[in-house]
Image 1 (cartoon, rainbow over the protein chains, first blue to last red):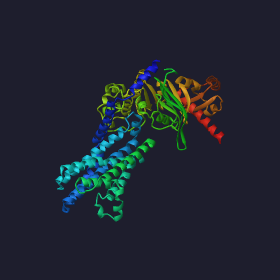
Image 2: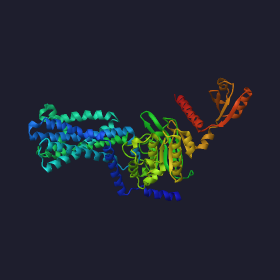
Image 3: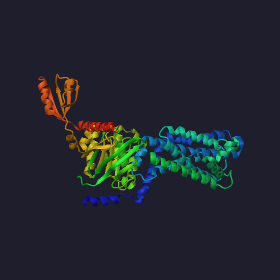
Image 4: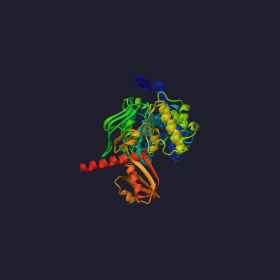
Length: 263
Length: 309
């Protein structure tokens, strides 16, 4: 009887008060950010690479092309830069942690559902915001680009939210490949996709066939949104948003299904 | 803790297949409140799979898996367990205190940080980054993570691998303290002396099944083998010819004989060699019992296979 009593009492204690549950999510996100801030070797190249690219091609080489070229390149290199925290920050770290057994350990623990992924997602969003901030600073100071505050905020938002479909894609690849193989695979996706979406050279300069299939790539749609944010594109935007949302949901579902099966 | 104590974890005819390999073949296991059950078995016996099922990491193909009467994939069930896995690469840049705070945040009613640290002996490590710790210190931190949520059931998978003797003894003390508080423990280990020192019951696995379950004492007496050691002029080959001798080998000068009929063998030895010296007779330890059990199981299943073929 006594044991039955204590069993019932314990039953009650295995419920989490909502405040503690929220605390667990926050703690997970906080430590996820902390650990990468302390390991700059992982995130810094991811964030600086696009800025360096922009400095070379967008600022130094595009000087003669006029102000519009500067803005155009700010948008497309911004998209190029936002993709990488998603694909690499999310995908590679997931692949490494599956390999090292950390994910297994966390799955055995009573970590609230999704806290691990949410932590990584916030981390990627923060990194994407930093990437856009860096590019904005370069564009406004060295690139002589002129933007209204609304345009700047719009571009920042596009970056912070636009990283999410690439998080989902990175996550999916991270569930397919364990450990050190993931970065190579992700490069194979990242670079060609950027090129074929017109992020390096404007789409009209690419072969007709590539122009035709460009809407297949999520980066193409994000580029359209980024161009609209800096005032270089008019027209309806929701189809692009919908495509990105659908892309994110599809890969998220695929990835969680694989995670549940393969761990 | 008696047979009537409620089960905190249970496998009932659990089956798990990976392709053509059957990792668990109808395994039964019960961990009762307040006891330490040691799960033993050679590599590939299915221990890791059994634990994976109980932690909700994998799903059984058939049979029942329960943690506190619930599906282990229910988070409510896992809020009552603590876990120390064999290899989990924890975030290297996080400090020990941060790791503890994070893990404790998953539980409804965790221990205070200082209490956890004192129990696991990591108080002096709290400010250190995890990567800067020695292997033994990292194991202690992993143990601290396992107990920080005030669990009712602890899973300890090879907890003392990589620890020196002193650290191992300290961990044993901490485990006994948790048991005294009413916590149950499921321990897997390769060190039989660890099972002997800590376990109320042992469960021996071989080829995906439980082949023995009982107290440490019962396991030892079940195997009636004795070990005889002596210095003698008799050769290994001669002794091998004796029907009572089940195993014999020589180490430097000393003969090591295992037998179920120690009295007969000793009499024959003394008859055959009047110069025999330094005679010792000992009850076989858990190690011999364990080897014998798993070998029997292997032979039995080999016979099964031959009969089936």
